[in-house]
Image (cartoon, rainbow over all chains, first blue to last red; front, top):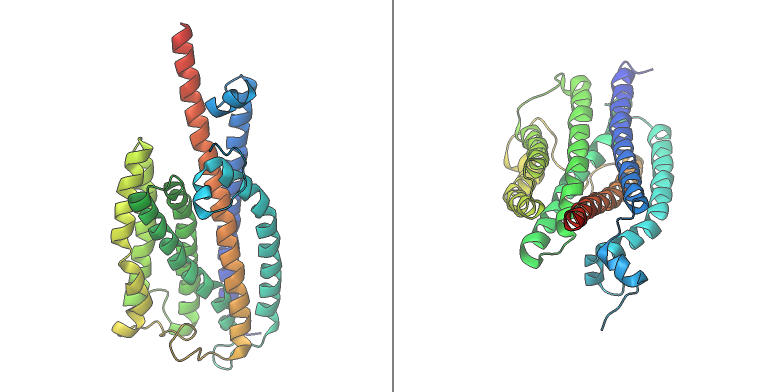
Length: 55
Length: 253
């Protein structure tokens, strides 16, 4: 075992934390926006382009 | 002349956010799958190839450090192209692209700085030196943070887009400085050993995992970027719908 294994482990751990944080942020942000859009739609607020198409 | 189909036939069709959302929904599962595959292959190679005869195990830090550093510069380049799209062609998605890319670029730059520091301590004997390469990458990190802050500080999206685009283009001068810093100045950081005119000088044993990891990082970037752009389009749509709802309440009252 090389004496530097701790540095390698720490690097991979730091990279993993950053990547998982990015994925988590993008996923949660997307989910929150989707929920907001759903709520607006349930409240009957529609985009003008959509109301035109349906009527 | 009204074309209501969502098919994308030419590049300018992407300017329609609804078309972009449809494309993103189709592309994202494939991108996620490819990213996972390349990370599995890259990490397997990274831990099964031999250590370096001088560096020993620490050479494995290279497989996550170098792609992160490449991506930190590629992300800024994507933002610079988007900035041109905002200022020159007024492409409606260009500003969405630049805004979505900034936090991703900041994360990759931070990753390059942290892993570089953890590589520097055992190999150079120091966590940090203010040499040209390390300093210019640190400046890139600060620029990402500044751009994120500026974009969020201005309420009006159109104005924020224009100001950020100008700042992005001014800051682009840093990218060639980062790339060539190791040649122009005397740095503790080694010069390029992969992307150079006379070809890579690195042994294939290390080059193979490095390139696979570089592809994995690139796929990860585009997956996150497209998903973040989709989120930004949704965010703007929510704002527009709320404004529209408020106006119709005003009319009824």
